Length: 382
Figure (cartoon, helix red, strand yellow):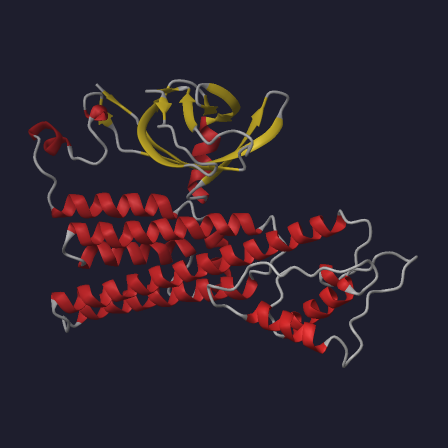
């Protein structure tokens, strides 16, 4: 018996509630077999779970579960999803919790498959029916297809990076996905060793997913990512063009030996990994700086009166005179002793300098003066 099947990819989700510990999975009903992804511990889970399905109803119900508890869901017409899949490679689904309050987004892909027999539908997606029945080890062509498929599924979820690259896509590429596919296809085709291909592309995928994460986080903070993001897009595009050129020359002129091709492609992948790693660090540091600034402001706002200067230089209120330093030429011996102590980095130096005296003898004025001296040396901490 033959029946029509469809390939459903449950790729990723975002905009999930941060108050929940990250243990999410997706269940899809209205099809046979029902889809139930594995549990992923992330607030931006990536499942990349693909399954052949047969629709048993006119609608598919996508449910997002936190462990065993349903937190949000969406019901979608099957024909509408098929129609959207004709124009969009990845489909965005909005999920809601009871009360129709929008809660999260789910990213899927739905494509029509060739007709399969009921027995063929049970064959693993990463094997041919013959290989599955014989237990044969996948040949080189099979593992290349498997790696390329997995990498592309991950890269299709890089929505923020795709937005950055989209305005800068050069000819002969038409979309950012073509750029990513070129990188994957060329690496898979010309790198001979399976372990080398997996190591290169998986590590690059991990870094790209991390960059995707900081780009999503950057939306919450007051940082300008325009210039650095254009650098990232330029890096990805240049390496894709270079890899395409290598492929064209190798195919048309046969001018490279195999090891030369592999070396050049590996170099392109390494440049991408180094560049994306550098971008991730830069963005993470920018976010950390913005967080620190917000924390500093919050702490300062808790003071009864605050001047927009270092805390040692804070105004003490309108009823008192502003703090002043020692008169030039006075307290020279004490200030020199304090300064030498503060700048002495030897391990035997005491961590505490005890300045004592009767009330009104100038302790605070001396402390203020040494703070200002240290600030001039760019050594002042707090």
